[in-house]
Every structure is written in structure tokens, then in C-alpha cells.
Amino acid sequence: MKNILVATDLTERSDRAMERAAILAKQLGASLHIVYIVDDEVSTVIAMAVEKNATTELRRQVTDAPLFKDVKSHIHVEFGDPWRKTVELAEELDADLVVLGVHRNRGVRELFRGTTLHRIAKSCRVPMLVVVERALGIYHNVMVGVDFSECARNATVLAASIADRYPLTLVHAYHIPFKGLITQGAMGGDISMRETRRIEAEIAPQMEAFVASLPTPIVDPRVEVVEGGPVAVLRTLAQSQKVDLVCVGSHAKPWLLETLLGSTAFEVLSYPPCDVLIAPLTAAKTGHGDHDASPNDDKNQ
Image (cartoon, rainbow, N blue to C red; front, side, top):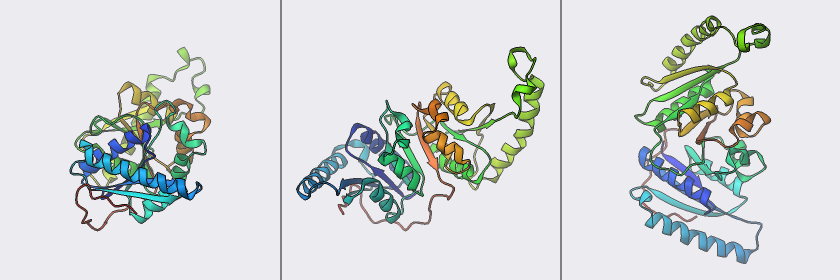
């Protein structure tokens, strides 16, 4: 990973995103591009004042905040529609990751309410990290939703690069067709232990083959195979295991992204207990040229 773009509006939610982006940039040796977009629908006088103030404040943060020490930081203050310009800059700067923040009390639900975040999520073709919590260090408890698809493979590889030396937890949620008929008369309406073991025994080799197929070896991942809806399972495990990052693929199952970002089923993840990383079907771009920027080299475009 060579380039990380973090979009900020200089609010508290953006402060969380900036902190996380700086930690990741230092951890991965990436250049950090800090983007502030001045809405071009405001008057020229106001727009110019906002540009000046934003540039001054971002330079102050990059210079004064310890987190930015030894990070190759570039500041981009530009005019335009916030979501369109952010997506354009992600492509122009060859970004490998876009980092955005959400209000802790609104959660990822905000993404599906016609906001800038929602529009970026739908349009951006690179991985997107939605930051909810304040960064206390590198991620050390990372969980990946796995459905054995190519998109899940991309999410796992990306998660592994971020998790660094910490083991991943790979989660596969399975659905039992006609469960209601199967469990009729069963105590408590549950399927038998024998049936559960049979299903999980069928899934085990698929998980082994999935891990073996990854281009980057994953050492001793923790595997969870759980019956239930994928979002409910991810939410429950993330809470019980104190996960600090959940990773999912955005197009492995179209309904999964919709669920994670705002459908009715997403009510279970409306207030996620951790940050969420969304990996697109197309793997993040690689093979970038090296950048000559020095640490904290401001670049105002």
C-alpha cells in the first residue's frame, strides 16, 4: 500500500479518521493525502476564506500532532462537490485506501441517507475504511466476513496487510434452508447437534481451500463457522470478541453491502462496535511509483 487518502471536514468524526489514517500510513510506510473539499456552491468570498482557514488548520495539525511525525503528509484543499471531488482525487492520486469518519452515535447507518459518505461508498473503486472509534494504536483484533468469493478473498488479503502480525478471525455464516421444517418438534426449535456438525464438516474444507488460495499466506487464522445471517453473526461476534475492525467485500453478495450500509436488515449494525473496512471486487491498485515527498511535505492544490 503506497497511498492513503483521508477526507476531512475538520469535525470530530474527521479527527478520528485522520488519527487512524496517520497510524496506518506510518505502519504501512504509505504516503498520506489529507483532502478537504470546499463546496463550490458557496459564494466566492466565503469559499476563499474557507480555503485559507482549512489550509492553515491542516498545516497546524500536521506540524503539531505527534501522530504525523515521520509520515509523508500532503495537504489538498480543492473546490468542488465534496463527494465527486473526493472520488476524483482518489483516482488521480492512485489511492489504495480511502478513509472516512462517521459520528459514533449515528454509525454506518449515516452512509445510506444520501450523505457525502454514502455517495463516496457507492462510487469509489478502491477500498474504503469507515472509522467509528478513536484510534488507540494499530488494529490488533481484525475479523473478516468470508463467503468464499473473489471479493471475500480481496477483503481477506487487505485485512491481513492491516492486521500486521496479529491473527485474523475468518467468519463464515451459513443458512439452513427450510430450517423451520427441519426443527419442527425439536426441543427449543433448534437443529440437532449431529446436523450442525454435518454442515460444519462440509464447510471446513471450503474454508481450508479458501485460505490456501490466498496470494498472501495467512498464518493460523481463527475460524468461526456460525449458523445465522451474516450481518447478525458479524455483529454478535464483533461485540463478544471485542473486535476493532470488521472487513467485508462490497460485491461478493450484493445484499451484503446493502445490509452493511443501510437496508432494513442492517438495523443490527446500525451502531457498529468497531470500524468497518469495505473491499471492492477489484483488488486495490498496486505497483505505484515511489514518491519523493519528505515527511510533512504540505501540498496544497
